[in-house]
Length: 183
Image 1 (tube, rainbow, N blue to C red):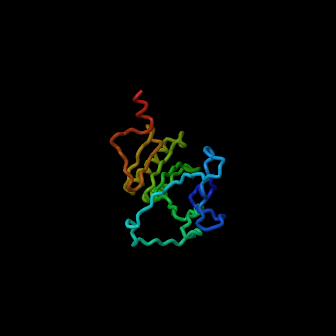
Image 2 (image 1 turned 90 degrees about the horizontal axis):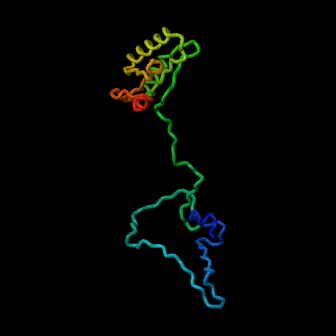
Image 3 (image 1 turned 180 degrees about the horizontal axis):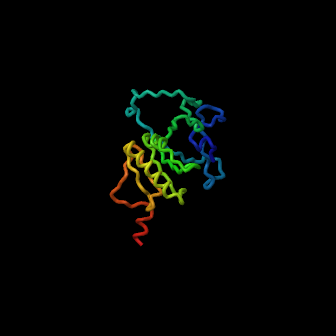
């Protein structure tokens, strides 16, 4: 049984000599008790002929090297991937404690490409205030140049798509409407 280094195909740093290869253990099934040599099966790895090797390829490695002179890839270092922040988001907005919708902030986010969902359901017993908020959102959308879409039949959930966001308005199938009409 090989050790952890052999499992990953890396040279064992604790092995005495550089480039030392562990020999395969002799099979025990057909072992003879005499002093005759025992044949051990070996696996032959296909070699690429030297005529097919392109000598113009240069290999530049600036990382750590094994004792054999091979590049050592440290799997614990994760420096190759750069994390990027998304440029667009889906924002959920509801009226604040004074029942206001901050349309200036919403307009700024919409111009950056964010899609905004405005929830007016907290204004359950304030129908006139809901209408005022809808009017204010409609004016803001006209100024920005985007549309406002109702996501429910009571016009209490409104969606404002961000700049360069495409909304399909031909099918008019939102939420569970399609599932309710099928059954």
